Image 1: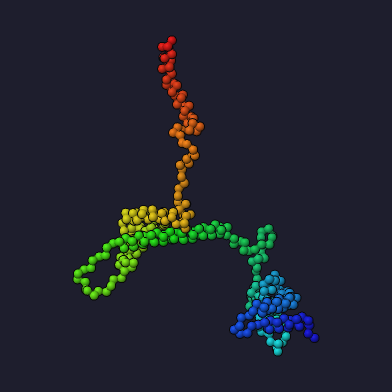
Image 2: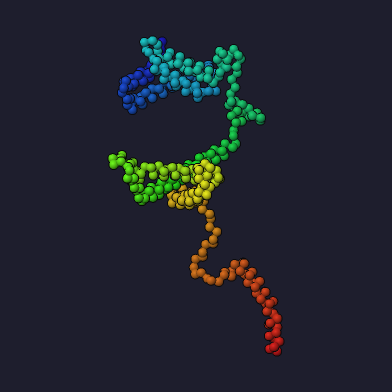
Length: 331
């Protein structure tokens, strides 16, 4: 005699099969809703046997993983279901057994036949005891106290490198723009009289000869290497001179000019506002007071008050003989 659960499972599977779209046809929203509801009904009907199989395979400590495996088993049972061979309850039972057996082999390796021959034992990292006898995790022993600081430092370095690279690119674009303007204003060289009459046309970029553009790009690349090494990496003048093939004095001149230009770019471009603010020294000059300014020093300030007292005292002692002589003559 067929049980009510078996009949309910057959009805739910029938709903899933009816709402399956044909090959090459996209399923509608209603069909997807019906399929989802049928799957939820199947999981509700087999909940008791799922708990039974989980206990049977010793996976009670992995209940969440076991439940996910059983949901996968339902999907595979629906795919393999053939009503002419057996009822759906038979298909789903065997699929659940297979998925739970596979899960047990993955999380409990000592259950495999090969492990039993060598008496292997599964050790769980999440079932360790600390020194106080309290349950803890073995992974706590691998906690890196400096991980947060190292991560923040690496992220800061990454952002700083990106900002530096963008700032150098902006300076290079500035050099390229100025260089192209200079080359465009330069008069074109005269052709030699011995040149053939039907010579091939010379390549030009924005009205500038291609050879001049190549020289400009080579110069820009060399200056970029100098600026990046000297300003941002702290390389010595002699080292950069040996690397680029120019004199140390020329390296110093390029660096000085680049530093001034980069400061102007950082100040004008809002992308580098933080960098410009960080490099600007704080003003030490006192702020001017509102109102009418006086040419006399502020008498309320402590240093002015002390200076006045000292000066008055010195003046009185210095002129005391003159005062005494004047008093005597008057008498």
